[in-house]
Amino acid sequence: MRWLLVDKILEMEPGKKALGVRCFSRSELFFMDHFPGYPIVPGVLQIEMIAQVGGKCIMAANPGYLPVLTSVKSAQFRRAIEPGDSALIHAEVTLRKSYSIASGWIEVDGKKVSSAEVMYGHVPIRKENQSLIRNMAQ
Image 1 (cartoon, rainbow, N blue to C red):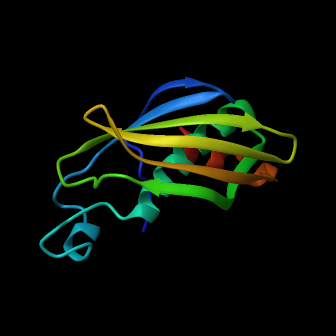
Image 2: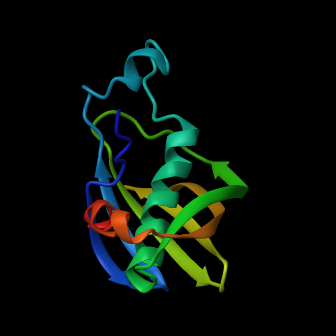
């Protein structure tokens, strides 16, 4: 199973900030169990959405390194994301030599629904894997 939780990157300043979007349909498998009668996007997937947008922003600035999630410093969930919602995913990135931090938030209908700060380690990409990883980053 592939966990692609960003439909499209709408804006990006490599290594600084990015904006992505994800539209949720009723056919998402996790809605069946989370929760029956009250389907919402799990918080852990919201954190992953922020991490993916931040990771793409980091990779655009450092194409030789793979940003690997190492910690979630904080996360808050204010409102549910439901089937049919379109989520805007914001990430502001701080680059360091061996790690990066992304502060991000998700908006639905102009209202902030969640936020998180995540940290990534920078793993050098082996030459034989560069084209594979580059294709994932696009």
